[in-house]
Amino acid sequence: MRTEMLDNVLNELNSSSADVEASAIISTDGLVMAAQLPSSVDEDGVGAMSAAMLSLGDRTAQELSRGDLDQVLVKGGNGYVLMVKAGDDAVLTIMAKANAKLGLIFLDVKRASKKISELI
Image (cartoon, rainbow, N blue to C red; front, side, top):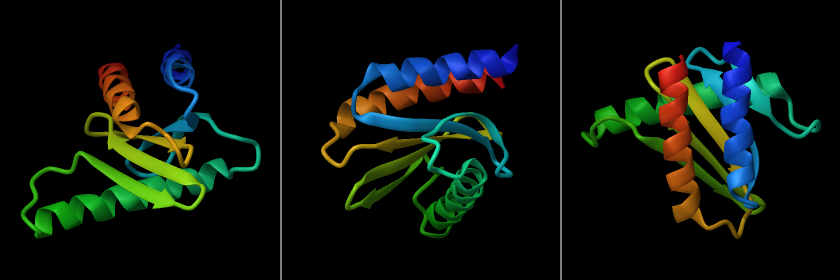
């Protein structure tokens, strides 16, 4: 039941913008709870990388006195990877196109992460 509700959040997020290519909800220890990823992407790898990046981002924010971590954004030649905390126990990771309208994506991701934190 909970997995189905998490999948619904991802469906809604992915359909909210043509710029969002994939998404996943991952526990802070790297286990994938729900995902809508292309078949060419390793789900376990995304889980491990997301947890590691979130942990590193959190430590960086603390060490450099930037306050609590809100998000980690990675920009590559083929697009973006955005990781946002979804409560204390999960991270929402999305992949977006290189020409994505980030302002709209940030808004949609914030809404989705709030829903996820309420479900977990």
